[in-house]
Length: 88
Image (cartoon, rainbow, N blue to C red; front, side, top):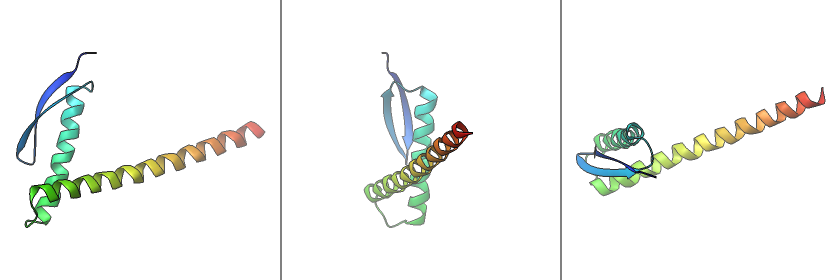
């Protein structure tokens, strides 16, 4: 159960991450957050870092819930197709 550790840069600040995920995965996630914060920050130059971080979290949560709903819809379709195939 060894943890990986990596230092990443998010919105101009360095963070030390540790976890069971691969270093590449942690870098990819941090890069995504950094990209989102920069996107929101550049569009709203008067916002402070905390507000940018909260807006970023809200945007990412929205993406997550939309994707989860799409995933559940796809699972439902697959189950219905499997049930229809079982009937034939």
